[in-house]
Length: 394
Image 1 (cartoon, rainbow, N blue to C red):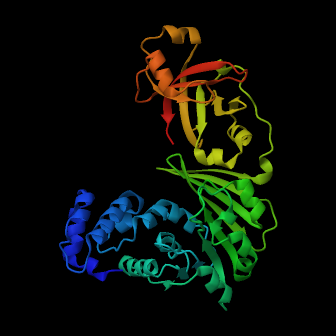
Image 2 (image 1 turned 90 degrees about the vertical axis):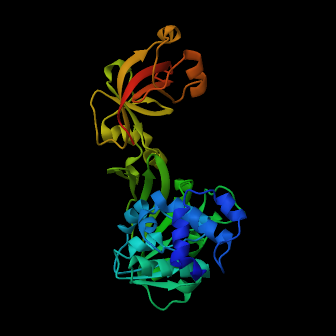
């Protein structure tokens, strides 16, 4: 951590160059003694990436930013605030502290918090920023969180861990491919806290997660604007019941789809005649990640369009639905489609034997603002085309 970057003149330079050509700055001589051009570029890039993701940090003067990769890997403020509600008790230890965004919000929920970060420089950066942000109840420890916890004499109410994929591995679908290895250390962790919160990437296979973990009381599937951001595994030491799933969307208004694991095994009700339906429902990615495809229809009173298509229909508008809702304006036959020359709408393809760009070109479909043309299949396997108007976005 180069404290010279915090000089007022340097901070002013960084702020005035947020939209500048950083490649040019990188190749130029640094205007400040003791600060390299590369360090300045890192501050500019990381601060710019924080503008929407970390607005509190971005708006606060004299924040010190880490390497851009740390900003990319950290939680957004909106997801950090959500997961802070899962903390239990007065004390929490984060054994993979990182830039400290999650802990900024955890610190608002608990009295005492320990932030462990093996990267000494990143630990100092997080500690400095916490003081700038006015957070006073975090103890910053530049140590290996697992090893610290293993030898610690005190226990905590909650442990938070965000395991990262090992550098030599590509996409991660199993916890054993991450570090620290939560599954291998779970028994030790359960002796140190009543509750453990594990954050994993959305690519992690949920069934695989259950095979590696135990005492999972809740699984939270968190999405933002139809992009699944993270999975949160809540592990309680004394839990013996049935796991609760929460698929949550953190958009303009928070919505949740909540169910128990034993509710998933239900039969789907299919739409045999789509002409009876006025509305089409497309679930948010958080619901799809849960795998509860049939339960979605059952919970909302919707009929599934096709066994392999996660689209649903109803004669009733249900604004509580977690996902997009379309008004079905017209069911277009293939014959009419071939003759049509003025079809307008954004194209959606689900379980249909053609690509959107090919359909747009073939049928001369013009883009629309609120109009959507949906190419899919009905319950009998017939190709159908729906002309729709969107009523509810993600």
